[in-house]
Length: 252
Length: 200
Image (cartoon, rainbow over all chains, first blue to last red):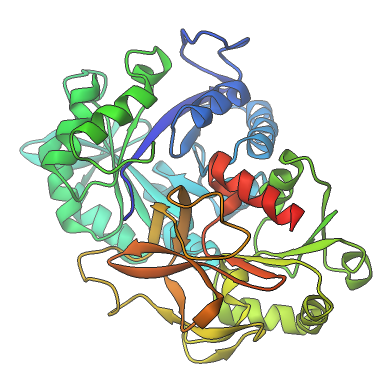
């Protein structure tokens, strides 16, 4: 059967990984290639590269880095950040991305998900969504979580999946950065609403948070995190052994 | 020297990189004259069966690939490229494949337990039945993304993966090999499979 996936997310600005790391044995902890190789050798099931560059020059650097990553890392690569048009899909897929994650771009252009799914297939289109509770409602936020769109999250996610999003990354703004665990009620609502894979993001602080995630919500397919992996609080090989010891199917 | 058959579907960049990563030369081409000089061929593929089969036929590469396989050149089909090796596919109608391996490609819908998601996407474990290509990787995890699968492969069946039912993961018949999963996305295990192919 399919295993649960553990996915580190790397934020890249001007071709370098943002956020420090404390890995031993790495020459350059902000090299996306070196860090990506480290993770792929150490149990990551997939990598997400997120381009947080604003400038055209930074975007060009990101594209070059992506090519290098894709020529040296042989696990699935998802790329997000600044994906607003079909040309953006084309640009990152040509560099070797396997899946493309779209967030604000799908909000700005409601036809983008459907158009991309038609050209590249559902499995290639990942809907990433930032959600926060407002007035007792799950609300979709845009622009990196700064802007309330007023849209109800479950309806939005359902609509995008109907349009062809093959996977959903649910990032809870309410739990993000708190390290008190994933947002289980929000994840439950979303995983009950759609039948494509749901990836939990936001809030993981320790191994037990992943165990609780997969034990409480067997429908959730993957757990994504950034800083706890980058700073070494959670080591992926150890995490996967812990998951296995708790009866959760993982690739060791 | 591995020739990767380019018939206009998908990006072949990481596939070529993965062959180079196991110390072999690789090139991507749609030109039969160049491809015929390769020691072995890879038939890749993503997307829909009909579209891919038509592109392969329109480029004339279908008869080229069959002739090369018949002449004994090792051929590896990957994902949709594996499905193209079969006699036919029932993906949106009934479409002819290359007919190098007996069997047909059918939808998972209605055949796997309803609680399982389609596509079959992620890391699943190989149960190796026979053959040269996968003999060293029984029980290892590899990466799958597909919604259709091959059945009725008879003695060509080389490996399955459990997805409620045994899903054909690999086939092998003489010098013709097929992997439903993506060896170029399956980490060290995948690279070792590609290395074995280069030595077959």
